[in-house]
Image (cartoon, rainbow, N blue to C red):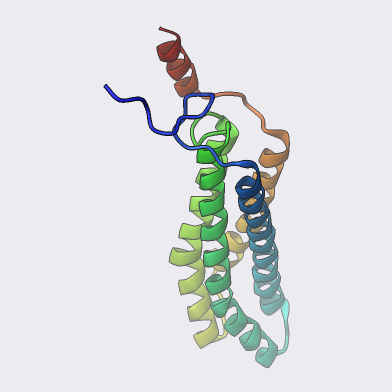
Length: 173
């Protein structure tokens, strides 16, 4: 029987070394901050278009809203990808801590609602000059949940998931 391939001191097959981890972490932070900034810009455009008395300005803001998801979606996918790489390559893992699982759920929800709601409703608003309520609710929700994801990253609440406990018991036995 052959030895496990390239396992680290904790028995895991993949581990990011110091410099690559810093590069991935920097990319993750930049993409996450950018994603949050885009979410704020989207919410601002949606609200400003809704309250504006200037039809030309409202239409321009709705046209801007129509294009912003094409910045938000790649930023979100980059944040999810680098976050996943960090999870796999560090001690945090992807399912070891509840806060990581919550961040994954938040990220997937924001990307999916960008694709299924914001893109569609923003296009309709750009064409008609009037937005439907899902545009405002989803854009404001994106800002809120991405802020929650940031808080989760800083405070790391809730401890470990039960899957870690099972893994540790199996390793000990």
